[in-house]
Image 1 (cartoon, rainbow, N blue to C red):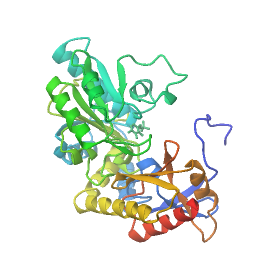
Image 2: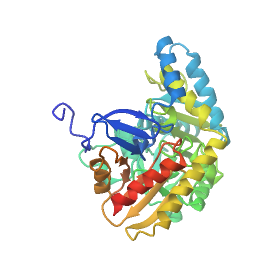
Image 3: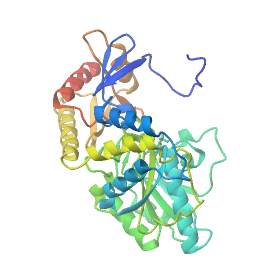
Image 4: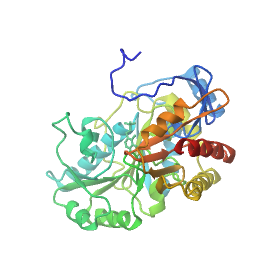
Length: 392
Ligand SMILES: *Cc1c(COP(=O)(O)O)cnc(C)c1O
């Protein structure tokens, strides 16, 4: 198998055969509790019955129409999604297939908005050091981490990075003569689960509004209820101009979305943008199940379960755990050692009657918790007990 795939991933030596709820089973029958949800994707766990049914029913009826035509399922999904994002001021959506593709759409919206309203030369997108926005050349250009940049230049022009939390740098970088947009993750995921400070986001929103710079929230990882509100930006009490979503949005089926509020909802016009698979009816059917589930009291439970995990991590008083951060079921725990051996041991120690644990890392020394929202209290306790053993 290793001879056929390109060498892009450091894969652990486990092959999964099936999943149910928060549990995965490998081809040898060993079980693993899933604290990672395939990087925040399987938000309703594995083989969630309503999701399975919606996908199967849709596949039996219609699995693709191109965007020259209409699909009731895609339309219903778009309507519900805009409704779910209405507290953040969202008005319209463009459907895509991945986080990177969604962010490309957000960048295009910011650039065209600026061009139409203010003329040429005002195309800079400012983002943060430590950010992650995707792997295409332009979403990499927006990603403020040098490690991802080596070997792939030249990059798309017109990007600048500033350190998170630095108000002076923010004020300077958001120069209205040259800047179209400010792109930010409410909680930086890949670089270590780092929530933005409330004052920082509030100031950014103010400056963007004053200077007519679009505020673009990349909620590809932290959105769709992950932090206990449908969008993570709701917690700051601000309204971004554009929000991107992907990972958990269809509970395991590829999908991406770019949403825009009042200012930018009508910027993209016919033939400005497109995507062959965008709004695919199977993804839309799956997305509808996620939207019908991740709302109301279900969101409160995400918050409560996250607090439970954070409290347990703190109560252990394990000297190997240095700091715990995050919100809802998006939690990072900095450990004194490199995180990767824990990930490996979570897999290698699995045996019959002794389940393994799938947990992720972020940055070098951060354990990243992104369990499915449907995890029970008992399953949290089981997973944490395994983790406690793995940490030693
Ligand atoms: C994962 C991620 C992306 C990229 O999403 P893909 O679907 O892998 O293209 C972009 N932004 C953030 C914040 C992410 O976590």
